[in-house]
Length: 412
Image 1 (cartoon, rainbow, N blue to C red):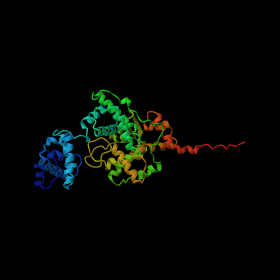
Image 2: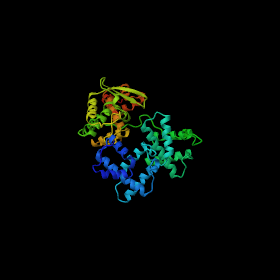
Image 3: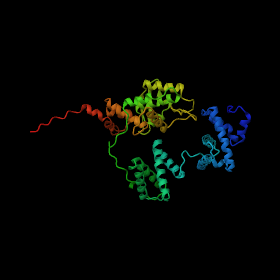
Image 4: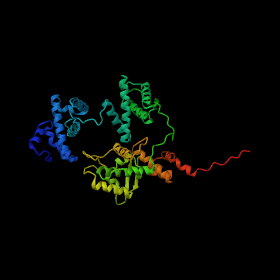
């Protein structure tokens, strides 16, 4: 039974008779279980009732609110609110539609709005079933594929009748737009997409092998790094008087103390920390192996503070949870956002942001401290020393300390 939200029973009855109807209790219970405050619950209920009046005026049935048509309706609703000078109240509505889809009343809303939803949805399923790809890699592939499909649409080319010349034209178009050739990951995404179309019988020829990947040379560019004093300044910039600050500080410690990837921090679960043995179990999906690292006292202290005072109560086993309802595990992008936010607060403006820059800075710091490439590679979980070797270039200023004096040349 849901908790009493409205002190006035007449107000509650009004909402029960509106669009919420038979699902009033179901929606309220869902919000309560996900940590919403009473005031937010009331606001969301009012927004849903307001939306209900809108769809009744449009003679739209509830069954039409699911799937891609539901997303298109929300976009139309947003435009209509804006044209009438009304506040857009879509967030609470979207949550309600998600609850209805969970209850089996309407079709699930797509995770991502797409102009080419049927095709890209099949492609995502193909990637998930046929490769051990990280979530971020799948999203990057999707971004490139959608750019390519929009390019085809803009040139009036059906999405499964394109030729290798169209792919070349797209790469050239992106080169001009980005002022340089697209990164090899973008070209690899196109190759993967073409193989998918061929394997599913949507094109007759697999010409993915004809697409040229931009040539890149080993050590041709340096990863962006901060000096270690700058990294420490970023840590000190975090306001730990707030619950979000306590969480962000613990996240940053995992990145700076172990050089973890953003996905590895996001995937940390409560069970990955063995407090008795003082170890942390890191699951490296990208490398296909596990790491057991010592629990550094400062990291353990930060995690305990977060668990005792700041982590919201929820059913999830992931360590780091969103700061606002609905409470759910934070993803890789959220980890990188935390890094970017605090780098900017600390007053730095590097050429690249994100959690991987902290990983680069960590490795460079270890080299400057005299660690061997083998030791650094073991900590970072690299398959080969080639992956670690680039950090010798970022730490090249150390070579100046051991450089030999140039001998004097005497001319006869």
